[in-house]
Amino acid sequence: MVFRKSVVAAMLAFCAAGFVMSTTALKAADFTAEQIAEGQKFIVNNALFILFHESGHMLVSELGLPVLGREEDAVDGLSGVMLLESVEDEFKAAMQDAADGWFLIDEAKGEGPQESDFIDTHGLDRQRAYSLVCMMSGADPDYFKTFIDSIQFPAERREECGGEYAKIRDSWFGLLEQHQDEQKTSKFTVTYEPANNADLQPFADLLQEAQVLEAIEATYGEGYDIPDGIKVTGKTCGTENAFWHEGSREITYCYEMAAYHAALMVNYFTNLNAPADPSVEQAEAPTPEAEANANSVKLKLKD
Ligand SMILES: [Zn+2]
Image 1 (cartoon, rainbow, N blue to C red):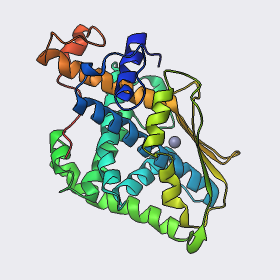
Image 2 (image 1 turned 45 degrees about the horizontal axis):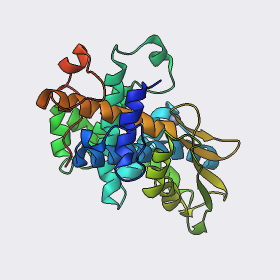
Image 3 (image 1 turned 180 degrees about the horizontal axis):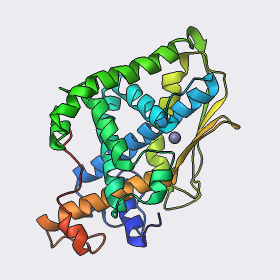
Image 4 (image 1 turned 60 degrees about the horizontal axis):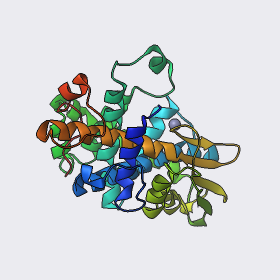
């Protein structure tokens, strides 16, 4: 995805409040303090989900785990389990932003799935979103009730989610149990490379400040029999993506991915602000479709 310059400037506004004030950035005042904080949290939480997804590929590769079904679906499941079963309440809450992330990506694409989406190794964006909602419902329906109610997730589907979630969780934990060793520590090398790009450096700073990459080491660095030397790297890649690379034993999170999630939030808040206060200067002149959809964007209430 190529962003128009005004969108890049607006994305930077999210980071400008806490980090770097770019001369090209829109005034942070274009968004409320709450929106800026929510935008930053959204970026960080989606990075967490993506990193734990990549950690699933890493575990399959490093531990030689069997995969039944599509690996991309399986490691979405692992990421969900790791966040939902974490003792850190922020990790659990991050699932809401991860689900919203896939809903917003789906809506941003607009015209519906193309042939290439059906051919892709990943599920459809909207399917991935609903899979996460189902896991949330299965793991803790009370904690996520406001969120799940807000997307009108059907009652009959919720009934299935408890059993489905337990199966995903028990399958992953059952496999990982065989590779657990309380005495073992595994060394990870966490690196935030300089972005070498003024537009992306604020995102590198945001991720580093939040210690996002360190979450992988914190989770797997003790108690698992994983060979030392796995690298977890943040860098500018030239594409908005994240990878596990078996040969170099490296999880890579591209700063462009954070910028992509920032752009989703910029569009969301821009649309949200537009009908309520038309006098506010907008990051983009909203298209007629965007205005029509301003209230239909699936960003849901947070607990
Ligand atoms: Zn993947």
